[in-house]
Structure formats: C-alpha cells, structure tokens
Image (tube, rainbow, N blue to C red):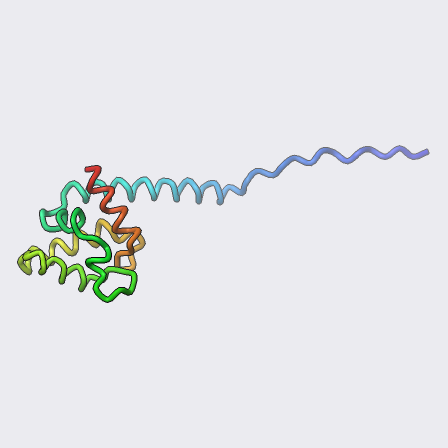
Length: 121
C-alpha cells in the first residue's frame, strides 16, 4: 500500500503589490485634489465665487449639450455684468477649481461638487 501525502493547504494570494500601490496612489491623488480644490475655493475672486454659488447648471448650459463650455462661462459672467478682464480671470479660476477631469468643460456633477466645496469654505 502506497501512502500519498495530502496536498498542502493553498494559501490565499495577497493582492499584487502594484494593485495596492495603485490604490494608495489614487487615494493620495484624490486627497491632494480635494485639498487643492478647497484652497482654490477659498481664494476665488468675487465673480468666480458668485458664479459657483448662484448659477445653476441649466442656466449656464445654454446649448443644452450636457456640459458647460468656457464660452458659456464667459457669457454667463458677462450677463452678471463682470468686466472682461475680471471675467477672464474668474473663468480660469472656475475651470481650475471645477474641471475635475481636465477636459476643459464642466459637467453637472463637477459644478455640483464645486458648489459643495464653496459652500463648505
């Protein structure tokens, strides 16, 4: 009679190191981004802050394409009677703060998040 050794227990594999590192980096990037957005919110010019606080997404998205373009921000600031030099500065501040994915336009979600950050600052 030949005795066979039972198979040794199989240990569960730990997640690959690069996955853990990637998650940690993404968490760190998200935390850094939130800090930057909060800082930007606290230093927004009066016009940029008023825009974020008072303008609804639907009010600014004139063409109804589901995003707010830089041209739509400029038009909205003009409607708010902001002079052109201040409007350009305010537009850049708004984009820097709200455009989370860096695509040059602001989605409804991005504007809502910017409103929350400004309200909390």
